[in-house]
Structure formats: C-alpha cells, structure tokens
Image (tube, rainbow, N blue to C red; front, side):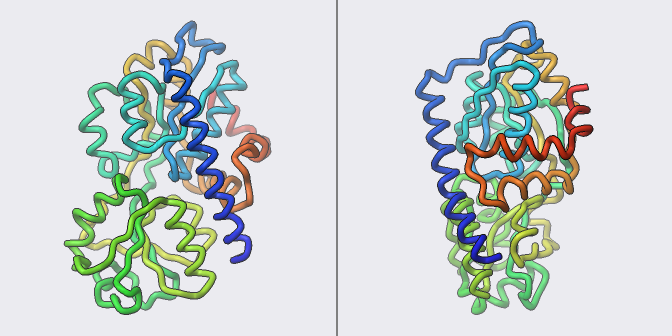
Length: 303
C-alpha cells in the first residue's frame, strides 16, 4: 500500500500542475461570462473548482459530464479560493460546488456573498479536523500539547489562505496551547505527501484535514476530538452561483438545487479518482465507469 501511495502522490502533484495550467489557459482566453440562452442545453457553462479540495473536484467533474450529456458545453477552471469567489462575483464563473458554510468560508461569503446566489446544500456531514497517526496514545486535541515531543512540536497545514488554516491559527492554536508549535503551511498535496511518507515510515504526524476525505480510507490516521469546538461543528457543503444564474439557467439551477450525495457514495467516488493512479486526462474515463455502476442514481439527478 505504501509504495502505491508514493506513486499516487507523485501523480497527484502532476495533476495539480495540469489543473493549474488549465485554469490559466481559460483565464487567458478572456474569462468571459458564460453565454446564456434557453436553459435547455447548448449553452456554455463555466465551473470553478478549488485546488486540493477533493470532494469538490469529484462532484464538479461528475457534474461536468452530466451537463455535457445534457447538451451543455462545459469549461472547468481550477483555481484558489479567493480567485474563485471573485470570479463568481464578477460573473466570469457560473458556479462553485464546494463552498463550506457556516464556518470555513465565512470570511469569503461575508466579502462576496451579496453578489452570489446560494443554490443548494449537497452534503451536511462535513467537518474540519486535526488528524494524527492511528496509534497515537490519545484521542483528543486537548492532549496534543502534552505530546509535543512526540511530534517535535510540528503541525502540518494546507494552503496559507484556506479557511481551515485561518481557523487553526485563530482558534485551535490558542485554545489548545499550541503557540510554541511550528505550524507549517504550503499546500494540500504537500500535506498529503507528508502523511504518506510518515505513515509509510511509521513516524508520528499531525496535520490539518477535513472529512469526508479519502485519506482516512487510505492511511492509518485518525481525527482528534475537538471538545472546545475550535474547528466548529459539522458544516454544509454548498453550491454557490453568480448573481442571475437561476434566471439564466433555470434547468441547471433546479438540478443543482436538488442535488444530494451521501458521504459513503461521495467517498466511493473520491477513491476512484484519488486512491488509484489516475491522471487528470483519465478523469472522464474512470468517472463514466463509476456512473455506469451508479446509473439509476445518476439518472435521478436530472429526472
């Protein structure tokens, strides 16, 4: 398993680079607002997808194929959080499927929310966590500081501007006495690579993470309890669209408003994309195979 994990994360890094290039290419084309029309297929739809948020990537890639099958032309732009919110607010992107509220993306929604439309909640089983190796001798965040030597006072984070990062800095660190710890931020792929390396070597590891996430199925890690609720409670994974999207694209708006996927099915889709050695140009092939295995459910999404 560990050898496969190493290969997977080398590939995951290449996927991120390819996705970034694709996003830049779309931006270079002018970032024009999607054409609107009858709302009965044939229109051009622009989907914003956030780097590193696997659950959002999974459902966005799924819906891009569903919309193509319904006759729409779909453009996907992979981008960071702040640009994705800005692109929705300016109308350059039509929708983003993975906005966490009320906590994780609260600041972005406060800044841009007046220029967006909330479409719908597709999963309410999300929460942010601090995860450690499975055999760590404790299960709660209030014991993490007492084991500073075990972790060399090191907590591995994701992107500096992520809501999870800000929440960790503002609440987790002071609430649980981690002020003297080295909180290192870089990117989600880099954090996952450290998880892969540490678990392969049997080393202690503490990282910021979230659930649902395929890493809990792949590596021997566990989420720590958060008795102070410093990371907040369970959240809603929500679709937000540009202003006017419901009027311009009532058909898609209705489909997305009704869309729900339970955590078990979501993680099953994530594993297909991220646990196996899948290049981005193979996403369509593996997702379509997954769609065939879940055909009745997929068909129900646009019934």
